[in-house]
Image (cartoon, rainbow, N blue to C red; front, side, top):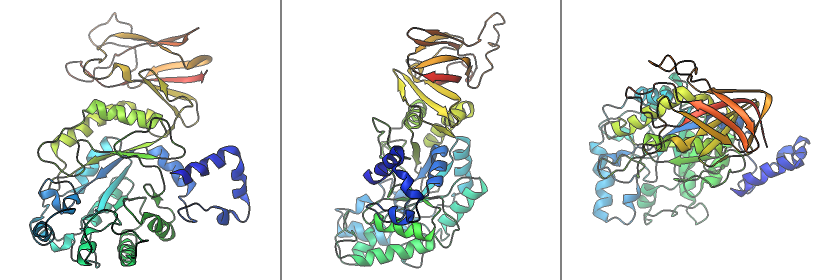
Length: 447
């Protein structure tokens, strides 16, 4: 979003010295209003790298797209959706600690939960509408349990909130459609209603770390949140948040890209096509190399359980992160994103560069156990202090092959820095590991 880009351009050119003046707050204005995310918190956000998005509402019972089936629906459908469907929503197996255990193992640092999607169904104990979780057979505050579980497991608490509210539109004689509740089209009552709901969410559950708005009217609500909890980071509403895509080039400032694991945000029991674990890992690598965070979605089933197909993608990611997390967390992008089949990140102090050899990942290109690769990194050059490591392995031994020499090496050539590394850690029983190997280079320079 251009206002944030402009702010970072100003910082880059030195004009940010203006912010040192006594009128700094008066100058800190953009098209969204006078209040912005705290810059120190944005730096922390850039450290986190990976978040888990959770899309879940009472229509997960049907396995439909979340909320959007109400648009263009018959009156009979809408009536049943509003009046019948809550009567059968009973996620008796909901255990947010299980969600957090999966997330934390996979290296997730923050969660974002759909407190209210466009349908207007509230997953907390709200006094603003009867269209909420308390009026279901389950009858308990799901948001409360979610927040408490996040804190037990040391994960940052994030909320998703849609200002566009289909049930509010319907009950106020409006057609159900996206963008029908804009704050500038004479529908001011919705703005008041949304603020009452945010008052509950930001008063009843303590400090909230992340807010993700989705819909018209988020500019005003972003300012509202900054006033209520200045330490809360607003992602969508203030940052660039590309959805279901990665930018071709790095974006200015902190940003976040959100993706589904399959082709639907909410639980889809049939006709779903999931990304492979390798695809998920390589998406994370590319995102971090371009300076962003990846917010990857799960859709719990109607019982409250993350489906096995989704869980196993996160467990494959967990194994890879167990080996390579230092190249993903607390890093910054390099001045060069990468080169053919390779991505780079660097430690925050700039002493280490991480080289992601994605060209040798996937079933067709996977790197055989015990095989040595010689790769020329055209963008890097060695110094007198350069050292090389393969993350996760000591490069001393190759199991059952006592004469093998898995030591890593490098040499400077006219074409670039040539590295020679062996995949010497046995990750799977059959030794067939299809995911990206990461090389750590200390004290190297970019050309």
